[in-house]
Length: 261
Ligand code: ADP
Ligand code: MG
Image (cartoon, rainbow, N blue to C red; front, side):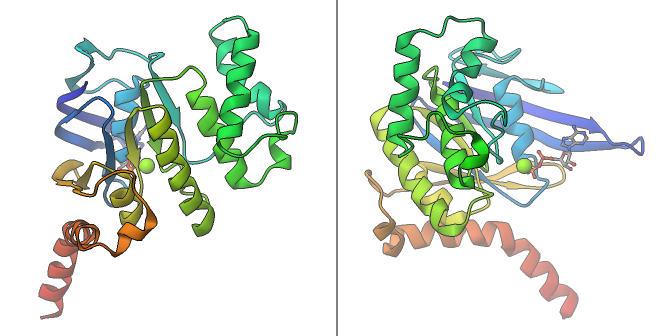
C-alpha cells in the first residue's frame, strides 16, 4: 500500500554544506500493517515520515500510496507529532474539529458525534469544553491523536508520539493505540526511541543507521495479536529486542572496544 522506492533526501545546512538525511531507502508497507522505525537521533526518521506525509518532497526516488505518487499532503494520511500541538485558544472539541474547518468542510452533527466518540475511546469524556492548558500532557497527546483520527485516515504517521510523556502514561497510551487499531484497522508508521515499545506494537521494526540515513535491517515480530505487556516476558519478544539493540549499539560497542584495545 505504501511503497517507498529508492528514496534519498538531501538538505542544505546553514554553513553551506549538504546533509544526506536519507539515502536509497526502499520499503513497502502493507495494508493494516504496524511498522515502527527506530535508530539513533539524526538518522532521518522524521524526514522519512515527512516524505510519506507529502509535507516534504524526496530529492530522488518516489513514494506511492495505493499506486498513486505522493506529491503533497493527502486526506487519507493523519499525522501525530511528538508534542501535542493543540491550539491553545480553542477547546478540546474545537481542536478536533479544526482540520474540518481548515478543509472548509461543514461541521455536521455527525462530525461532532465522531469527536465525542473518539474522546470517549481515549477516556476524555467530560473534557470536550476544556482548554488544552487544563489537561495533562498525556491527555493533550490523546486529544491530538483523536484529532488525527477525526477524518478516519487509512494511514497514521506518528513521530515519537509518546516521547514527551512519563513512562506510565506512555505504557497506557501504547495499550490505547493497540485498542484503537483493533477497533479501526489502520496502516501505521510509528517512530519511537523505545525498543520495547517498537516490539510490543509492531508487525515489523525498521532499524536505521545514520549519516546518511539508511535501512540497516527489518525485524519481523512474531508475536500474535492482541498484544499485551505480559508478552515482554516471552522469548520471542526478548529475541527481537536483543537483535534491535545489537543492531543499534553493536557497531558502536565494537568501535569503542577497538579504540580501548
Ligand atoms: P531523526 O528524526 O532520526 O532524529 P531527522 O529526520 O530529523 O532525524 O534529521 C536527519 C538529518 O537531516 C539530521 O542530520 C538533520 O539535522 C537533517 N535535517 C532535517 N531536516 C532538516 C532541514 N529542514 N534542514 C537542514 N537539515 C535538516
Ligand atoms: Mg525525529
